[in-house]
Image (tube, rainbow, N blue to C red):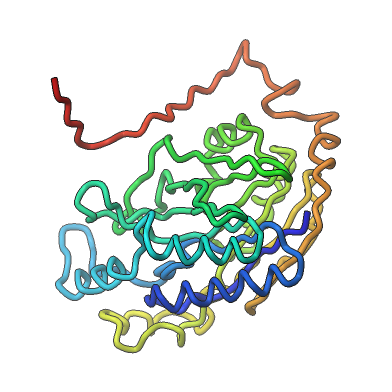
Length: 312
């Protein structure tokens, strides 16, 4: 199975242009034979690196609210027109596509954004989504928290595909939950461009005995719209705000492609899924290396609706 990891910059704060770019990159990866194509965290409309949204403890600014409003306006309804366009690109490519978006909650007033990973099948259907369980640090000011109902693993003809977003991958129990679902191709879209993140991805591959696809954006300060409310605070940021570092790792921790630094590009790797079973000869975190008599994990996958209406 050939996989593609897309390290690219979105068209910042422009949903429609982001979708058009994503569809073009799906076509490019498909032309190289990719059957699974991964995009970074928050590719549509952007991971808002360097922006405070006018918030400090105890106060918010009108300018910050305008900035968040612009972010919200360019977010994605699921399902909706963006999903239709991305699904059609996946169908034309005959490939599975996973892409990070800012999801606008359409069920309870639409006032919450979630950092979400969408999964599309080669028939164009939206197969599932994962909402980030725990936004990190200042992300919590602008994103909501997902629940256990979207710990998605997709069954494909190549193997089981699933994963977690960015620093969720530092949550040991979340990783075990994914291993327990038998994930074989583990997706880790991120905004972390530190060298130390490479060790995290190799550790997950070794711990989960799965292929790991790490995917990040490449972002330069000049890419931000000049009319963005609060854009002057970006003056303190470096010219290259995110170096990338996308990578593909084998179940025994070997780097198969990448890491890719300091430019946009697509990484390709040909995966032998037989390696997953062979790698578990000496270690299986939720199998023969587990001790359920000592340790057990309970995962609550029930949706946690804030309002429930019960009729007689």
